[in-house]
Length: 364
Image: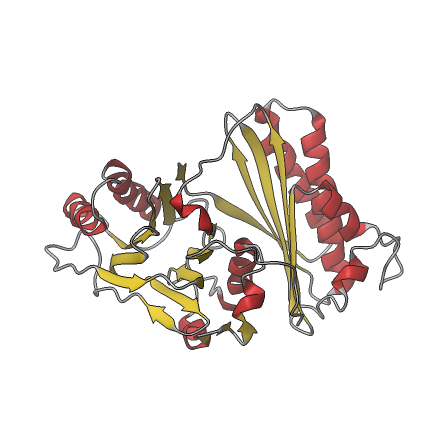
């Protein structure tokens, strides 16, 4: 199974007129999906409710991020509402119809949860909230791939530099029965040329996915010589060997965080396409329960010192392992995105022995 780059479109929400712009984007995007009006209508309801909440409950509004996917089997939309307001003091009450702290009808989050195929909330008092909704419309029956890597759940948040149409950050995930391979790329610079560089390098990963990650990177370097170039990190999670392997060049940051340790993935300086390079593959034992984090330089390095064993930004690991990985990526985006470049964040949560992560027991 393969997962390709899917870039989020971002919308600043500062007044009600911007909600109309999002609804226009939804209509233009879904016109070619050949579905009933139900999907567009459900998406509009969720976006309107979440955007209205941003205006009601914060002084400065917030952001709505949208990402569509249209395949032969299904069409889906992922929606993130992100703010730096007061947070949600009681999530359970906020999901109850009729509950409101702003004098409205109080049907917003409850309706959003009912419409959503997937739903999650992350809230910090006096720091803000993130709401995630995914709506899926199935076109025909399809089966998910079952494999040894089924205990690794991955998600990615990719966004282009503000006012740029193309994103030079790129990722691809290839899953087999024995392992998951991840390619994270940052084409040098930004815009269309950076996008093309990332696509060309990713094509090597796609073609050689059965090879070792070091051989893949070596071939990608040869292909990019004389071209714009890119920085790249390759990861292989092998749950049979209980090993995660990494080979990278350039400033992509990655860590695995567990209850007892935090392990980094060092990369050699430089970029692919710059000439001959001496590569090295690093290996780390997969912990029992862990959070995997990888990001490009569009995310501030200030976060690095906050990636500690048993916690991320003082948020306990056991709490984060119960959240949707995209919620965690959105948290990084909200607090550490520099907005001067493209940005890519990949989050994975997993365990060596599959366990039920259970219900939320820790609140902030």
